Image (cartoon, rainbow, N blue to C red; front, side):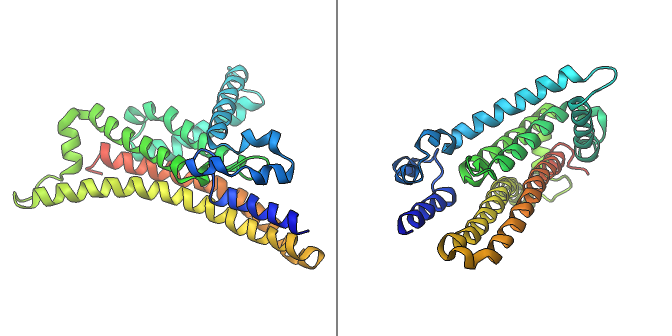
Amino acid sequence: MGDKLDAFLNYVNHHVLHHWGTLDALTHRDWLVALGHDVLAIFHFDATMLVLVSLLSCALAWFGRRWIGRVPQRLGVALEQYLRFIRDDIVYPNFGGAAYGRRFVPFFCSIFLFILLCNLLGLIPLFTCATGNVSVTAGFATIFLGMSIFATLRQGGGRALIHALLPGGLPGPMRPIMFAMEVVSLLARTFALAMRLFANMLGGHVVLYAMASLTAILGVFALPSLAVAVALYLFEVFVACLQAYVFTTLSAIFIGMMVHPQH
């Protein structure tokens, strides 16, 4: 019992603190041997999860193209509705309609699907949750920052970027202060996107493992906590979808604010 409990606690510690893909996690392999899953260790690398999600996304795109024609069928119908949802409810309202927003639809469709798959796969015990690693969410946020600057420059060059970071009509002495505040605001949005996704996914897993650990410690006497864990697991499925939506929507809003600061 003690060995199993120690193995379980090490397993929880791995998922909460030591994601493989960070340097300190490379020395934490004993829990895999204790659980008999050393062969499956590759799925506990965040890098492996990112590659797996990339392959799944490409597979969905390939099968979707096969089933999308004049009359979409099967997966093609679902992907068509998904594209319309991202386009009509997230992209177009924040980019002034189809004239400029159309070119951003593939980007937001890709980032929503990628984050969603990372979140959902992280709920399967075999896999690790890549979005529970702040390095991964910081990577997503950095992509957002790069897209914000690129889209603004593409819209109107350097003058558009300056206009996005420096509102017009300000007195001369106020301009350096407002410019600095806008730059800090842009960086704060980037930081907020990274931490929001990371903290929500990490927090949900911590609660789930806390409930499950009671079962490992107390056995049959912890059945009520197991029922709570099942309910929380179903709630985490909802949170996984919600956080993908929130990240994508906030990214669209923030990039739209840069591209069209007058709105």
